[in-house]
Image (cartoon, rainbow, N blue to C red; front, side, top):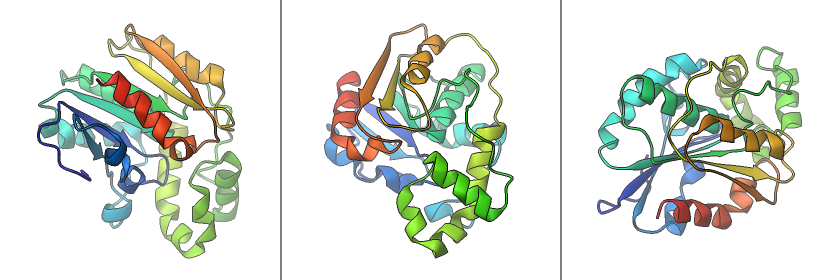
Length: 238
């Protein structure tokens, strides 16, 4: 989904949201990014405008149609940003494109998700009862906290949330050669889902330059610190 067309942009930025999130998470990003960057928020099945579609619960099933859907837009340089589950999707999509001979991004931005080779410290919750599952989600700070103020919406989104957490918890990392793509990792100082050292470990996945940026905030620092985050992204895409 493109919130503002910029036909003269030199680079496209594809953005992947966190578990339970949709394209609207990135609806204001174009307002704070320079004209040479065109923002595309990726809307996968089961959320917002695609609510009636079956969400994917396995990374391996998502990647082929995702790559096919994005292929017409890879005719100019592009970058990927992903937060939390979106970081894992962005990383695995980049590796999938390399395996299938696709164009690679000029930069990979990962946020709020530990490096993929590290074992998760979090409890597996996607198979629990509804109450236990939602309690686990709240404890993990895994979705936007405002959703808990709207029980009807939360119930509607429950299948999507389960699918997203199943994808996150069941995905198995398989080693491959390092990416020849610069990676920048963003970490919130008070994020309970990951540690600074775990974000720094993303450096192991690139042979190109790596940077770690630490910003104040919890798991959703990407909203509170949006201006600083986008300034950093813009600087690295100039």
